[in-house]
Amino acid sequence: MRVLLVEDDPMIGNVVQQELRDASYAVDWVCDGQAALTSIATGLGYSLVLLDLGLPKTDGMDVLRAIRQAKNDVPVLVLTARDATEDRVAGLDSGADDYLVKPFAMSELLARMRALTRRKEQAVGPNLSNGIVTLDPATHEAQVGDVEVRLTAREFSLLQSLLLRPGAILSRSELENRLYGWNEEVESNAVEFLIHSLRKKLGADVIKNVRGVGWMVSKGR
Image (cartoon, helix red, strand yellow):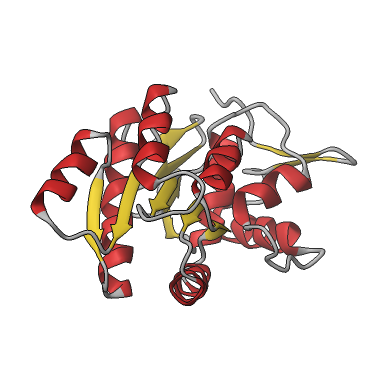
């Protein structure tokens, strides 16, 4: 899952980015409000935005309003030192999905992120399926026939990307964009390794290789 972190404090940003990467999130980190809006406009398809409010160039509240005015329904979790009730109310009324006051425990941040992504996934449907393999976003479990297996975070993200567009071929770079953040080292065979692992768990025919182009799951039956 790809996350945009908008935080101008280098110490907080470094810690949060590393903790999220350790939890297998793909993280892009920007330090001002204008960079946040530019990143969102690139169409990378963020699953979640972690947004500080006290930002240079463009204030976080203005970033939040711009996201919602653009009809973008990406979940936004506000991370801020502004702890007054009126600030929390203003943030929620402007379109924030949740509000976490600094300092916070990473365990709580991760729990709130999981809750927001579950809410988003349930809004579009509980499961993804092409009629052959079914993926449950709430549990990160996949099922083929009577076989159910738990997936790692990156296995889940890769299979989810394919099942969102059954029949469409996704290239290596498209899959890497969904799995890894900016400046995150990606081994040359990372995608192949994940696909090999998924095939071992779910069957060799679940993910098809189109030689020289990429990978896909069939439209099913």
